[in-house]
Image (cartoon, rainbow, N blue to C red; front, side):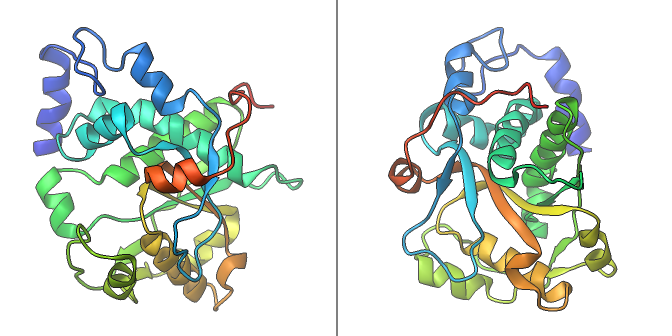
Length: 249
């Protein structure tokens, strides 16, 4: 009911920019440029956790990008899933490359904790992944969402934890749903999430996918993509190139 009410209220209440609050627009041009106006970068947290796949981010987690992500995740501004999905699609494309066999991309979102989903009324990463897959398909890239990851146990709130504490907190916390391993053989697996901070969550997700596929490890996961990375990781990445071309062949 909470998710339904948010969808309906978005149709009748005044619209304001999810980044700066400007009225009469869901996302103004300036905030949209911060979110997806540049080329995605490969990002590496420091220290880099073992098992972390290659990660690409569309933007740094600051300013309008931070505001839009928080509006979507914490305030239930579900319309922000569309621009966030476009940004995530750019990051996915930057890391996945082309497949000569034409296999589809399988976007595997990192699941939120059950209590967080219940409190928010939606799973932000999954919603953004669905929007990203739709954006990729519109641009001729076969893609679908394979939401096969599950939380095997409760974990502590990650905020305020160090990189080492986050890794310990998440160790063994994720698993793959029954039969999910077979689904992963149908395409190129890309882990997706809304935000990268220490990389512990993505590393644990990659471990879980590898374990479900007979311990294949990194060979199962083509890469990972996030909407945003911590400013430190994003600013330390290679300088962005030309603005990404969304008219993919």
